[in-house]
Amino acid sequence: MNPIQLFDPASSTYTYLLFDTDSREALIIDPVDEQLGRDLGVLREYGLQLMLVVETHAHADHVTSASLLVEHTGARTAAPEACGIRTAAIQLQDGAELRFGRQHIRALHTPGHTAGSMSYVWESEGQHHVFTGDTLLINGCGRTDFQSGSADALYNSLTQVLFALPDDTVVWPGHDYQGRSHSTIGAEKAGNARVAGKSLAEFKAIMDNLNLPRPRRIDEAVPANLQSGLRHDADGAALMAVRPAEGYAGNITPQLAWSWVQAGEAVLVDVRSDAEREWVGFVPGSVALAWKQWPGMVANPDFDAGLRAAVATGQKTVLLCRSGVRSIAAARRATELGLEAYNILEGFEGDPDELAHRGRKGGWRYHGLPWRQG
Ligand SMILES: [Fe+2]
Image (cartoon, rainbow, N blue to C red):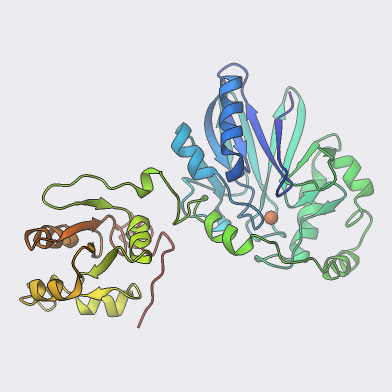
């Protein structure tokens, strides 16, 4: 069977929905945020359970709906490891397989449009399909002039990786700007205007002279897509909800804390020691008020007075520490002093990972919020 091909007219992006007819488990490739409602509707209409949300790369022309689909369906996100989408639950390497029911797709590393770009091969009822993202387009290919693009790498990915697939493999591109839906490897090998019969030097000359405009949404889309489509201004999601707590006003995500600070509703009080702020980094505009100080981590006798001085009447206080432990104690104390105080979950660096490194499992920096050093 063929994949379900869905189109976003604003960005000319194709999204693909693949499913296993027996188990109804499904996988979606390159979903677009503005089409969330449509995509959830298609899943309902076909009676599908979405298992996986897969990206071909970190897009520059649209924002993915990956994180929203996860919230609605419980699916897991998967992205090429070299794309740096650290929020993706599954980090794909070349040759990795993703299963949905009795079906699976296989990841092919096809760098060039971006260094991490991948294509995905699917074999269904004896027919080969390949989802090429922006690596191979119909009678074209993705650009290589930004986002770690490389014409050399793209030439190799097209001629040595994708054109090595069987000629009758159906090509499902990430975009088409002229209403074409699919092609085949054989047709592209024979007739693709950019690459068919071209030497590497000829290909590079073509790619160097495209003179394409900068994508309209690149400044917004790439940072959002590096976090599976999460945006700091996301509304109504669990991300932006206050979670109840004992002894203070609540626990909040770093994203919600930052949105309050930006709106002038809250003062961010950093309760780490001076040494930690200096070595590890700090949030611009935050108030430095240690809960405990090196050496010996003794309680700061000036904490209460400092807090009263920092927070205006009617303002919320949001408290940040390394991983969200000291800030709970500080939030309780601030509450005793009559303030509306919130603990920022995960702190500045988050919890340590399996190698005891911090900063890779959540926290202010991990979520891409503003910070500085020195
Ligand atoms: Fe792209």
